[in-house]
Image (tube, rainbow, N blue to C red; front, side, top):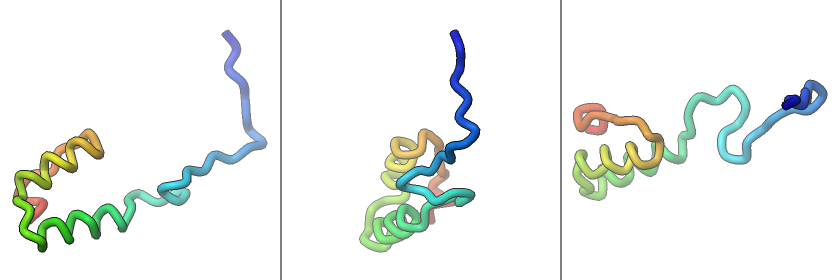
Length: 61
C-alpha cells in the first residue's frame, strides 16, 4: 500500500485554527453551564463525552 504524500497541500480544520490548542467557545459554554447550575459532575460527564478525556469536578469548579 502506498501512502500519498501531500507536501504541497496544507491541512486546516474548520473548528480549531492552526496551532491553537483549545477552543474558547467550548470553554465559554462550560462556564455558562456551571453558572446556570449544571452540576460539576454532569459537566465532567459532558467533557468526557466530547473530548474523550476526563476533567475532575474540582477542575470544573
